[in-house]
Image (cartoon, rainbow, N blue to C red):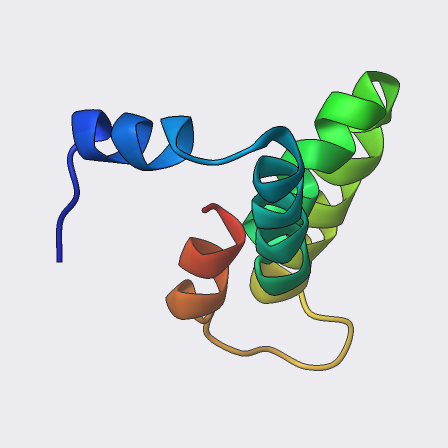
Length: 81
């Protein structure tokens, strides 16, 4: 499944202003990546908070609070999207 930017531009150019807003809101509701993107757009000074979130995920994988375990690289990869 692949779409070219020119196809996307054409699709978006056919939408009204309100339809574009609704598309963005739907994306925001469905995707945590989009939520983080707009979080940083709306609150650019909160970048440090987001970095702390990922720092905790990484620390927990390599240095868990209880016992020793091998890091789950799937968790690390998913957090780095």
